[in-house]
Image (tube, rainbow, N blue to C red):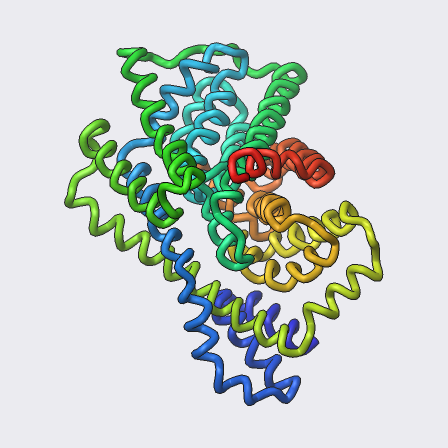
Length: 424
């Protein structure tokens, strides 16, 4: 109890999460009179950060940063408008489709929501859309980033759960498409009931050029997945190739990237990588201390005592992760909770690849729920929106996502079918 109290107090007073985790681990060691474990703290840090899979994280971040700086979003927006801009509520569909295409490249929900909020919320408002609905569509679309491959959350899960990243990438494809379809249905229903503006295509100087400019970056995630599942490259090597391609497209095709932009891009990637690896090291220490005392085994026994149903167990995990996600960032929730729950996952006979998809989805809900909800606050700050009406507009999308989560939990083949076909 003292450990949990210390951790929560540290969070509420604004202590960085990785420091709060280290403090919680140290409190736990002293509380359980296991101070001898202090001699192995640095060894534990080193072991957590010596995994080769972590090298993929900065490389995939670099891909997203380069494509973002290279004007990717505007190119995808023009491409999406060609397909769905003419429908009633067309800009809402354009927003969603652009997010879906960008998700496979940027891989960061917060970065995606930030960029799209600046671009789409003012545009939709000018065309007669309610600004809070525009914000809700933007936030919902941003939730696709960490599930459609290549996904940063999937890489992190693969590292901490010792699962193949190639299988996790494939496992996220069908769930991602299902959620896109569910969000599109929400927009359609709102269009029927509230009457969204009529569709109106944006101005296109050259339709073929806009189509090519939007499709070209889409080849990057496709090439990454193909290279990985064919065994030609590891995820790290594929990330390096994708980063080079992203730079060349941004510099030679879009002509919006220069060599002078690279220092700032590298600095941003370094900061973000340091944040994630610091969290992984701190959570590894905390999890190691808990394992030493047999806490994960006690959690397994508690879960088994509550239910022997895989479905009920997954629903309990959903509830736990969503509750944590209301206060912690999605990557933090993933890093903290996965090592603790994995023994229970194995005892219930749940495929760890399927579980990776499930917990990735569950952590995303917190991006759009108060009181922390970074997705909400990004849209609020960029477009000067109010919390209550924005969250009210987001609720239909969250409900659609939760329905999809239950379907994916009930039908594991939605996430396991593609890995079984391509990774026999």
